[in-house]
Length: 136
Image 1 (cartoon, rainbow, N blue to C red):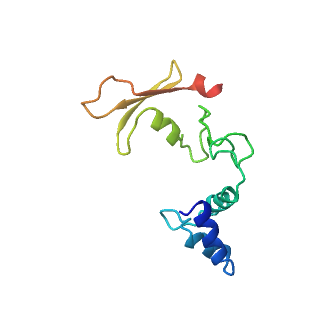
Image 2 (image 1 turned 60 degrees about the horizontal axis):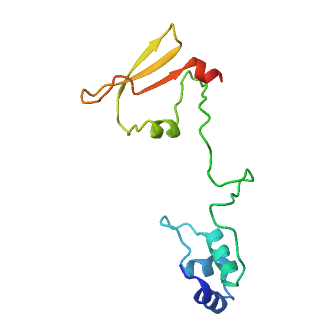
Image 3 (image 1 turned 180 degrees about the vertical axis):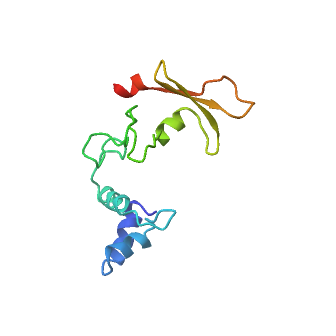
């Protein structure tokens, strides 16, 4: 990706072409081939000498910060009866795709326990979701 004077020179040389072609020619293309317009425009503005806030200090969502969605530690039963535990929670627990668990339901505490199926796992309880936690 071109920056600074090299970016400005290339953009001027291609000024008779569409913006998408200019950005592509300057190298602002992601690994999947998607055009990185925001990065291209930011680089142009910075090349012109204007200081912009860092990429991490402001988000485009209007909520302040660029951290994305945060785990709420809540879930609900879906219309089809499924209870979904999202990626944020499985990542936090260190779970990997393909791991298998035995599900134990404890009526007296309103808890669901996930017990690892593989014999090499340390500790019997990997994660616990209690109904009391969901009610918060």
